[in-house]
Image (tube, rainbow, N blue to C red):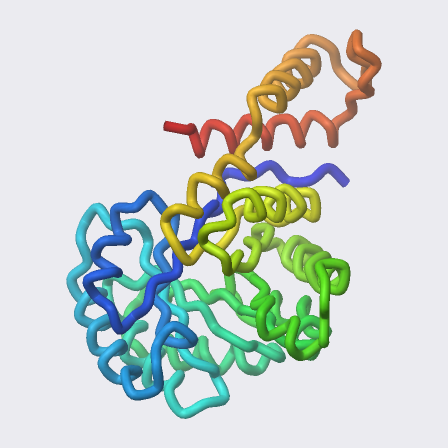
Length: 288
């Protein structure tokens, strides 16, 4: 079956900012990230959770018109804070999405969706499930198809590493592929990679992004604006890829059916669809 061609390119960069530092959030709005994720979970100390929620609600009630889409990562769904956070934020005009941490099964997604529906807004925020445990990985497809408002999956690799006892990258190969396959099988966009924790390691980030792209991920979460251009450079089609895609699409336009290019490359419908995706992504995310 020929893969579908994207009508809209999914976000490429997702920048996390701490919810208890509204001045940092405001500064991040113009940094160039495709999505700003206000974090109420790991980035906020326990004694500042209430303040972070108030500050976030205030921003989402009257967001800047030029701001990137604003998402919020709430606290764990099985804890005491998530329900209040979702009910408080879901009806606010500036909220585009909710990121749900540590999701282990479809029932949690449906529960979060019910809380969001109580926010009173006709258009409900999109939900994104973070898979951070062995059980979450096992239930990846069931989670991906749990509710119509669920729009994406992502991995939380720090927690996943700890639970699995993984000591190197090879140990995450299967969970990563599982997340990609589950998302695409459910008709969702490819998931973004988890964060690269060393903001000074641009070279390591670039290598990791290249590996993630080869696995089928699209884009990446970041924790500092300096990581954004590295992610973009790694994920956007290169000049060589764009030229090769143009050659494929041009050849397909002049000759029906399968064909071979002068350099020996075999071209069929799936190859043409892939080439068109490359051109669509390049057009949607033009550099500079």
